Image (tube, rainbow, N blue to C red; front, side, top):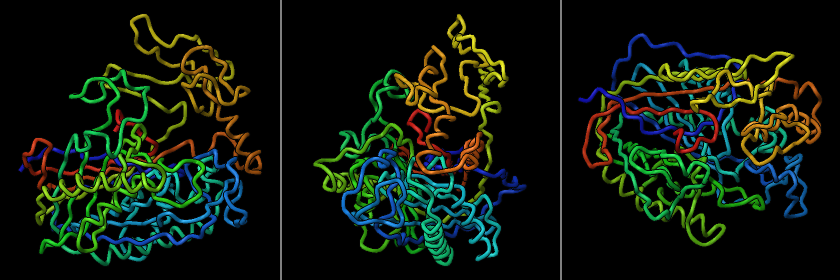
Length: 485
């Protein structure tokens, strides 16, 4: 039995922390028979709730004349192309629990995770703090106004508490159904590369990193992350129960002019794959490096969405059929960390060769405009980032808000827009008072990270060989590109 660790996925779970939390370190990690429960249902929210993902929906206007009590500054949704599913997977080895929840939304938030930890712990009698993950598909066409943090009003409209409560209630019910459905399971893992060689499902999205050799075995160029991973979960008698899989694909087939609620491209890969089975199976895509991965497909609009799903279903089923699932005695451990991300606390250290920090802020702050040393290394501490509370949109040709630029004539800082300007825009655009957008913005100060390790499981490797390996899922905020993932 191999003792090394196989990192199969880095899944998108965008969370912005407002509290400090660090899970206790387990003194012993012992294996036990792995029980898995899976369940799914749909969010039940009305048409009219604004869609998240495109800030330009602030100015898009309405596609029909109906008013919506659920929309504030964003254009309201006008109908449903696909309902928004909630899927839950409950892992239990007798010593530890992990609850993986997948929702087709633009991002996740800590308020939702915290509420689920509380309600699920109360309902089950288990301590699930730091053991609940809400991952999202990053569709730009699902409900958007469930986030109480003003920064994210730009992504989905002003916060609506009813939307948040109904979303939390539905997700709690699905998670508890997965808990009640737990049974001993057979599990197997598999990986495949170059499973979409002709870009029928997804392709490289951004040209900015084409000069980088992102992957060890692929030269620099306009390449996408070719990796597909999958976890097959069956009952002990061999009936399919659940399938988790991951690759990077953005949810942007439908553009800002779309007013229909939709899972977009990521969700359509689930829909088509799910139809490959003769009995109900809970199928979930856990997003990977989607920041530079665009959906492809054929035709336009809804037909293109369906073609993305149909193009993905065959290769997904092929990999599933190649995976051997077996009953296992599995270890399970999960760690959650609250990480400070304020300007003066960020530090990058790497193998003793890199030690980067920002120059501590002072009222007489003056940059030397020297980004690199004579040998080409980054000059540290970095003093060109003249933003006390943070900045956005660095690297563009010019700042979005010129009156709030950092006024530093050196790339890439010359194009940065100060958070001060973003806060002022939020206040004026969403009728907020100064206390609601006081600096530093609460949601900018911390973030949460979760990693869960389980196994070992029988694993199909990309060269066709088999091994017994542990499985690591890492969840982090943001819209990561393939280079990071």
